[in-house]
Image (tube, rainbow, N blue to C red):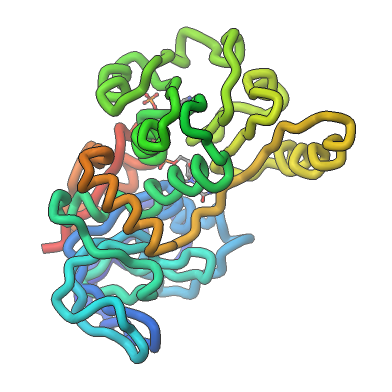
Length: 320
Ligand SMILES: NC(=O)c1ccc[n+]([C@@H]2O[C@H](COP(=O)([O-])OP(=O)(O)OC[C@H]3O[C@@H](n4cnc5c(N)ncnc54)[C@H](OP(=O)(O)O)[C@@H]3O)[C@@H](O)[C@H]2O)c1
C-alpha cells in the first residue's frame, strides 16, 4: 500500500511517500481503507522527536492518529463493525500506535464509531483527536454544568473550534479568545463573547467561569486562577512543571477551603465518545472547520502549515 513514512526524527523533509506492507489485523481490531487522515500538532511533534521521552516509536514509522474510511477487514472478536461500514477513529497514541497517513490502517474496534452521513470522509477525519480532546476536557475534567460558563483560550484552532461548539451543546455560556481575523468564525460556531487576545489580556477580565479551558496551553494557572469560580476547574492541553506542581498542591489546600481544581487532558481514543460527537453532528450542533485538504503526497506542506501554530480549524490529508 502507499503510505507516508519517516525513517527517523527530523524536519518535514523526512516525510516520504512509498510502498510499504499492509498492516496486519489483530484480535479486537479493524482494518480501515483510509479515505482521509487528520493532521494534528502531535504528528509533527512525534516526527521532530519532541515526544521521544514519552512515546518510543519504531522506524520506519507511518504517522497519523486520525482517520476516516471504510472497514476493509475485521479481527477476531469484533462485533460492532462489518466490512464496508463507513467509520472514523483514532489510533491509540499512548500505546505508540499511529499509521493513518496510509491507504490502510488498523485501529481498535473500541476506538472507532460509525461515520455520520452529514460528514464527508474529510470532515470525519478532522474530528477524532481534537474533538475528543475538547469533549473529554469540558465534560469529564471540567464537568461543565448546564447553565454554567466556560472560557476557551485558543478557540480558532483544531481543539478550540470543537470546544466552542461542545461548550454550547453542554448548555454553557462560552467566552472565547482568538485573533481578530478569526473572530467572525468563532462567533459563527456559537461563542457568546469573543476576545482578541492580541489586544486584550484575558486574565484582566472581571468575570469568573466554571471552566477555563486553555486549548493552546498559552496561559498559566497562577495568572488565570482568579478567573475561576470558587469550585471552578482549569484544564490545559499540555503539561508544564508549574501546572503539575499546582495539581499536587490544590488537593492539599482543600481542607482550608480552596476548592479550585487544575487538570491536564490526555486524550483517550474512545469510540463511545466519537459516537457522541457524531450524534451532535446529526443534531446540527457540531461542524468541523477545515482550513485545507492536501493530497497524501503533500503531507510535507500539511506539516509545515500545522507547525505555523496559526491553523484555522483543521488540516486533512485526502487519500485517493
Ligand atoms: N494533551 C492532549 O491530549 C492533547 C490533545 C490534542 C491537542 N493537544 C495540544 O493542544 C494544542 C492545541 O492543539 P490544536 O490542534 O488546537 O492546535 P492548532 O490547531 O495548531 O492551533 C492553532 C490555533 O492556535 C491559536 N493560537 C496561537 N497562539 C495563541 C495564543 N497566544 N492565544 C490564543 N490562541 C492562540 C491560533 O489562533 P489565531 O490564529 O486566531 O491567533 C490558531 O487558530 C497543541 O499543543 C496540541 O499538541 C494536546
